[in-house]
Length: 301
Image (cartoon, rainbow, N blue to C red; front, top):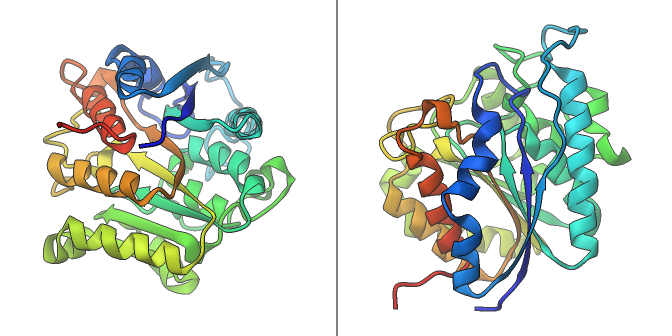
């Protein structure tokens, strides 16, 4: 495979939800040996460290339907600017969360560099809630909606443009917990979704073949992978804040990463929602690093 210059950006934030500990996710992934793994494959790794995140949790809530709005805006703006700079340097952005609200910033930094970006959203959840539909007010349930141009104007307009991705260029894989408002939005926006029903029925090989072919037909000029570790079954990734039983298996996940790597379409990636406090001996971070290995071309022989 082609060797790449990979820039790692850590985003130690838990402001997108209410369970403490996920801010330690970037440290857990590094501790599990991600840099060494990528270098062993042959890539040149530039670890830019973590962006600065305040952890005071003293925000005055302006809107109970958007918890920690100001903090999420600040973090997303900083991350978006840094991802933009990485792409300007012709490097591959690899972002570690933190909760899934960081995708707002990642995609904000990507969109200006691509005319027709595709997104694979590997997740148990659709993350398509808006302030009107959210059952919790947690912004980690909204990043995909924000990125297609729906939601609070200040989130939508980070880096002063919207949408960051066309809804018809989004593919959700592994969904099994979708709120009523999200289901309606999926229908309205024409978002392609492979739930666990499709994965069970078709198999991961067929799902990934179809997903890759669909993005090729859409003539995307780049593909971003946004992988929430709760997309896997909690048997393999216990250290996540919103586990949902009946998820993707360890082997199916590796197959998906391998097929995405073989497609040659991937241009950026993020891995989110690793929570060491909820984990078992860093098991979830170890899985994340193993999947990153497959995504970047690691082979057995």
